[in-house]
Image 1 (cartoon, rainbow, N blue to C red):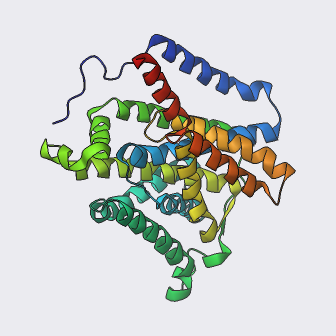
Image 2 (tube, one colour; image 1 turned 60 degrees about the horizontal axis):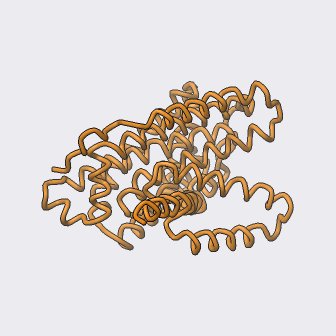
Length: 323
């Protein structure tokens, strides 16, 4: 079995702990000094992006399995939250947790066969699941003659609280995912995930139950992706299948993780912050051309830093020590 190197598990330099604590306290205090709705909304979007990228990173970043199906769990979380709140009168926070549980209930049976696949086959299988889920929700009412998912008309949720509420909600989710990623990275599970990335067959030969480890990572990713989908649904107050099951959600998660650095703790933080902060001003100034500009920027960054911003900086640091 893979053993955790002695003295490294769950340890973090004191300076890093103090810096992380200072950043967290600062972010908690921001709404007290910043009363601009747009600024809080932008920060909330950054937190949401970091959280989504972290979800994808836990599964795909550390294992190397490129998952093109997170939009399915985002949509499941959004619809579960909407239906529970609108039809069941369930409180918001309980609804998003139950939405995450529903997502896991789908993720485990889906993951058992698909996680036996590798490479492009796994990517295609997860993409097909996401598209099939979107189509099922879209056509369910029409085919069965019921009035449940509301088809393409979508579902309207109750009007949510202020931007400050969602700012803190996404801040908590982002922080929880950051801590979970750190704990996973330094645990036996994390070393097993990295072993799967490097040489899965060799990991199996030394006793690692690779399917079990992948299922755990896949379920964790699905749960939090669904929770984020539920929060976003309440934030937007209106959802449709084409919006919450959109492949663009998955693409954004992948790009943010690639930009920051797959399989790194800070990769999602840097990648999501970078992409969000360049997207907003470009969208405001070049509403028709901003996607082209962002595409060029992404290509340039990836060409210059193939392992992402954080991954490349870590590699440079190791090389400088070696020399």
